[in-house]
Image 1 (cartoon, rainbow, N blue to C red):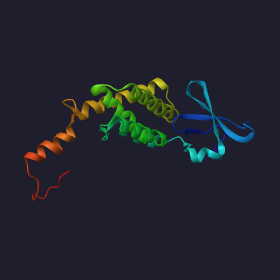
Image 2: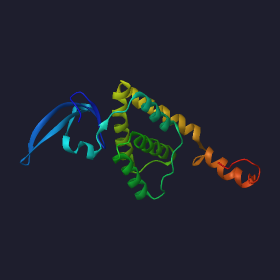
Image 3: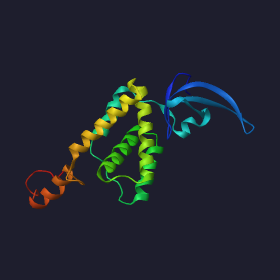
Length: 193
């Protein structure tokens, strides 16, 4: 159970501070709710009984925030070429409430946007994922929304410049696919990455 003043994350909505715990009568059923104050003066009611089931959790600490930044600084993970499957996979990552998964979605969709643009649906998903990520990092890092957004954009731009070579081919792809085709590594005592 959380208390007033706790900073928590509500999956698919982002992070906020518990403003109050109130009993409400909704549709004839009395239930206790966390009144969560979200960025932009938005208030969300979360049933206390279902908080764990929904995936409500405490915000991450500073060490975990560093790991989130390293996710943003790393190369993209493989995504389906099929738009529907990619959308569903990314939605599942966002619903998990796992900030590393949300950071993965932000980085991957940002890379895709830089390469060839996004559909309207994926643009909206990127914006939502970014808002969720920013809301938690603002509370963890005690920074402003603008500072965190700029930090995220800078980390993604840096990793995009580092990992993307010649449009869609990554430096990793070059070493794994092209070099290995021309230089046999078998039997030399070296391992094939």
